[in-house]
Image 1 (cartoon, rainbow, N blue to C red):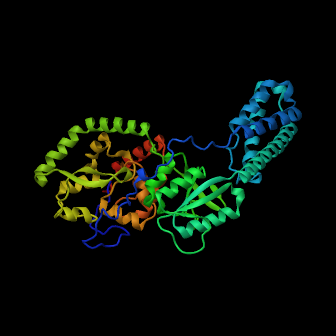
Image 2: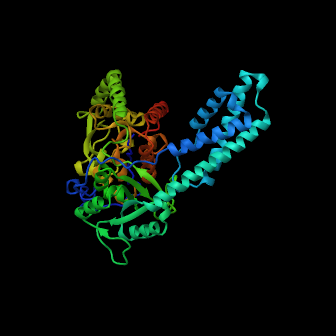
Amino acid sequence: MTAESTFPAPGAQPRGTGFSPVSLLERPVRTDEFRFPVRRPPARPASPLPLLAADTLAVLAAAPVAAGLGHRPLLLLLLVAATLLLRPRTASPATGVLDQLPSVCGRVAVCWLALAAVAAAHDPDHALSARSLLLGFVLQCAAGLTGRAAVHRRQSAVLLRHPRPALIVGPAATGQRVAAALLRHPRCGVRPVGIVTERAEGGAEVLPVLTTGEEVQRALIQNGVRDVLTVHPSVRSSRGPLLRAMAESGCAVWELDADSPSHGGPEQLAGFSCRRLRWSARQPGGAGKRALDVLVSGALLVLAGPLLLGCAVVLRAVGGPGIVFRQERIGRDGRPFTLLKFRTHRPADAHESATRWSVADEQAMPWFCRFLRRTSLDELLQLWNVLRGDMSLVGPRPERPYFVAQFSETYPGYAARHRMRAGITGLAQVNGLRGDTSIEDRARFDNAYIDNWSLWQDVCILLRTAATLVRPTGS
């Protein structure tokens, strides 16, 4: 399930032999120089109680008038419960009441239709009339939207009086442009207090530029910063340790698209689309994902033991000594580990193995080596990597340090794949991104998998991978 062929790396430019793969890996930024106040309580989210109260009062105001439910308390309680269960999620202050109108009206309609069905089934002689349904629907929608408008105005007023202080991380010019836009739109509720960048640039400064850990620490503490806005795709890889230190100190880290709607996030900030990044010490997945890895990899190693032994014996007879191929790959947080595979090719030397996209010539391989690669059986030894914690069953496919350095420079977001353990298979692979396919597409699918991780998604990817093994197409 790795990308191996005799072609150059997709999208990567050839490098000279003097290129140092270590020098272009994620720039090490020491987090111990940033003495941020750790383990602060996270910023308190907007309370859902005002919207709950608005929706409940809307039911209590409309139902007795429209359908006479004041004398039928069970039906009234059912309507209240259905309304609260189906109510729209708490919207951000940037979302107006008119934006919520379709969602509110649709859910209210479902509640009244369900109520009519229950009432008719329980007591056909006292079923709700069409007039009562229509009147109840209109009254509850009007009352609900009025209450939500009041809540929305109050939240907007609070944010206008007390905006959340934020630091902007990214290139100075882009950061100053975003800061100016945020300051022109105070109703967004965010007040930038500084630009965190590696070096100051000439030009007019809307906000002070912070280039050292000491300056960042001072701005963070003095302003009570709770939000961090990244304004360039490369920030997650180049300033990853800094962002992680800020997240661990209690800040919410957001990715803001300053140039184009690349991800089209549902959140909007002064017209920029943005989304929440998870840079906390707690990685996506956690104990549930690790438990799945241990249980499944352990069971498969036991069940596949005879198959592994048979492959090793045949490979030794066909290809000679040295049946296990070991290669350094980059795993979670940029840490290297040794990946295991059945040896299906023999590189000329260590440099060729580390710096060529692949040294395998499939036509020159023995028949059994071609069989192992086409059926992905050469990857089975990575179950041991999973069991010992180097890898996961599902995650971004790991790559060699040389190519990680190249791809991290060429493709924005590639280095962000290392937020999670590397995997034997992943969302990119089950969507056909294997072999010589777009690295940019792989990075996009891998980051989408991490951003939306769930244990069920892992199970689905494993099932889809098992289905592809029935009709193998090669590594």
